[in-house]
Length: 87
Image (cartoon, rainbow, N blue to C red; front, side):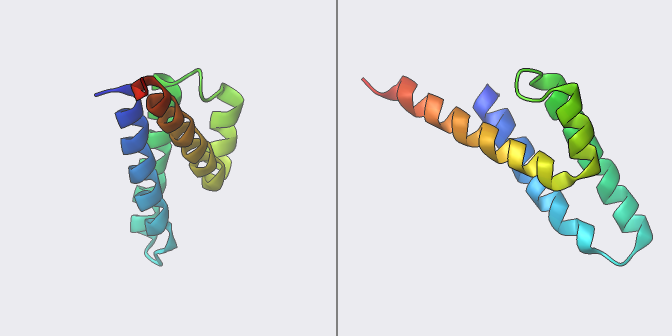
């Protein structure tokens, strides 16, 4: 899987996971929070150039920070891949 594909996959999963945070069931909420924390850890480990330890902490405190960072990383990688494929 390419760098772009991995970022895209994490981004999609994070946005889908965020949607599940609106549940009224505590068990589901805890599971969803755990899943989001795993995605944050995975992204930080795989892309330390895109997420500092401080940003990872902020992302765990506010998932919107993580989603914004993912959206920016995705857009940047998309732009880079477009530039590489041009003649």
